[in-house]
Image 1 (cartoon, rainbow, N blue to C red):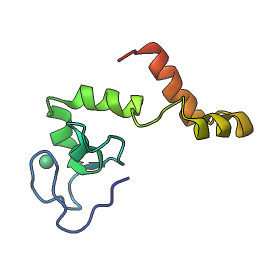
Image 2 (image 1 turned 60 degrees about the vertical axis):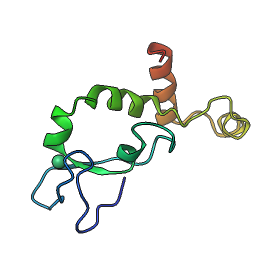
Image 3 (image 1 turned 30 degrees about the vertical axis):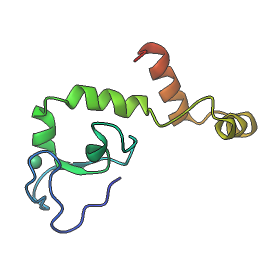
Length: 100
Ligand SMILES: [Zn+2]
């Protein structure tokens, strides 16, 4: 989760996030080159997110986790040695269903 400090601002409306707002935070899941990168490690008002025009696209990306490379040798070795963790299996299933 992104850490929300005092005076953190909503990445959508740019207003300061305060404790009495419903806030959604994201951990970084996109590379810097990605058009939504600045939103991928940020906090935002739940209300802003709900009406954000990129909401669905962003949520899809979050489920897809484009950062994760299943062909990465380190990841392959980890899976071989320790098995596939549930969260990784979910991403894999998601990708199999939704080819972007
Ligand atoms: Zn906002």
